Length: 490
Image (tube, one colour):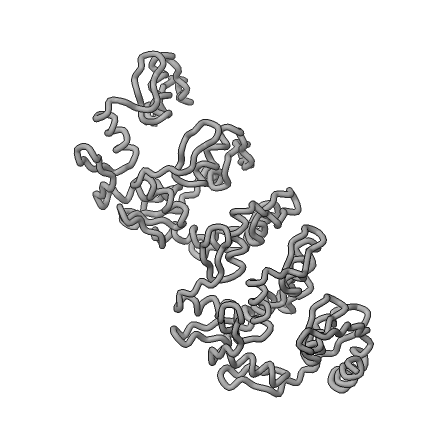
């Protein structure tokens, strides 16, 4: 009966070619007497024939038959004008505008706009995950998520943009991308008027107003706006890194991270700065770079007002005020304020420096350190002082320089109240009160606040003069002494 129903319906609307699909569905009765239809292609189960018939069309990408899609879309949304093929589809779509949620979860009472969404949500309570990946064993509650996941292993991207040729593994991502070309944004927020091209992004945005965070981590209880966020977060606890770089095999917990990483191998830099023309590999890198020109950043320290373009940098800076260092090195016991600082330090023990300069071959632990170093070869100085026009190679250098104009001294000695322009100055000053420093000279016992100062001092004992004048050959213990000397030649 079902086979005849689907065949006759599809013949009339979509042509005979579609009726060649073998519909070896299985039907079974539930305890309450409702017949369930099971798809033989993917195993998804449906409670009514119309949903099952509609679902079969999603498999019409096989080369064994042709699928002629009917272009007729007679049902239009009164709010945004979007046209759809079926009356039930337009009813479901209109709930986006009205906010109607007629389906309630029998476990927690949560209201949802779509019956299938309600079914999927209820599985989060029961823990039912019947769809298991044969490659990695990961289980899913929904066949759609399962199929998406499988494409991570196969690399399949069946959805291709006609405009630019970019391919996608996910239909929703493909549709959102297409709207980037057309500029269509049919989903408008009633609170602030902001419009969106993707319904998922629209749903996420609405939670900004409501403050709702319905997805909780089972390990630590942290709440999130979206299930994808909680899945990413859970990888912090379980250490899962399902995304691998094809050229080098490095594993990542996030798909976006592996995409950005792979650009290091390909050299692709799709994001260009309109101010200076510099190309960057990620949107985040571009946003940070633009702040170099503006001299501004969204993350501000509450203690001293210093501005940063990255939350990690702000977190690291704030620890200089609080003194908190919760991350300890297992190798030597040294404590750090951020996990990134600890990771950086641990490379001292492992001597791992994977990032090499193409000009001189010098190796670095982190790509940002390599980028800074490369400016010594290129002479690039992207930071310009608005007061005097002087340019600098590093953000920290321009921030220090700007204090010469403002007279700002944000670092204060807790002992005597004396203020300083730089953190290093207050650290050195503190030694005058304590009479001690962490770096001691083995020859005379003199203490210093930093290793570079100790090295300079040790040259007074060894007589080492590593800085030599190219003009006359005279040698000096410090680079500043060499620079002063070189002026006598010019």
